[in-house]
Length: 265
Image (tube, rainbow, N blue to C red; front, top):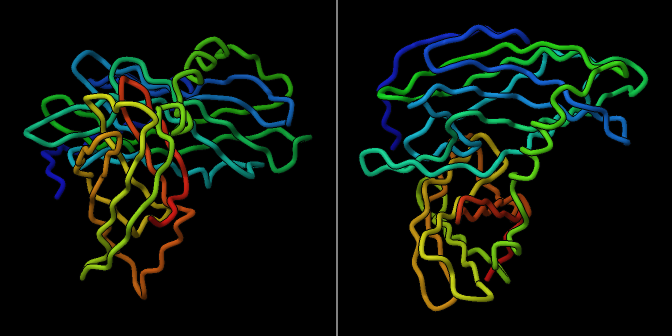
């Protein structure tokens, strides 16, 4: 169950964003890549004591959503989330950020010969003593004349994004799924090549907005960690899972490691 104390606050921001109590949000132009796509970023400048959330906020967090439908000449958008902090509040964990947060965003144009018009609406949560749902509208135009003003900041952020699970010392991962009345019980076993770190978190996700996977409980045995959780289905019809769409992320030592696809044991 998610527990929130919320107030309604709305932030409408453009490239020159307005400042709220928690700080501000802006879109940062970057540079053009050899394949014709644009490396840009969304930047949160959070005041002391405020935080916002990772792509998986955890049971005590608020999710971030993006709407790019107002944009023109975009065929794909890839967001590289930096490794999050782990916050604890009233016994519940959340995953997110504080201070300045740079989310690298790679935009692929439908027609590389034409400019890209970015008109993105974002809904996100920020928390201090209370959790506040907020929204932002960020606009810019990208073309061959775009100045790479944000390159140093974005390049640094790209070094902090998620790495392959093997880089975290995991030699193999597999999952067990068992139906329950609301969905499935799911457990992922991570086998390490050495002794696992003492403080770790495992997050499991599925690429479907109608599926929610709760926070995982960890059990350690030798060089293996088993993360157990509940997968709940809120859609209509029959639940059918594709194991290749299961994503398992390990958080440890301020870094994030992940793999997509989880074979059966």
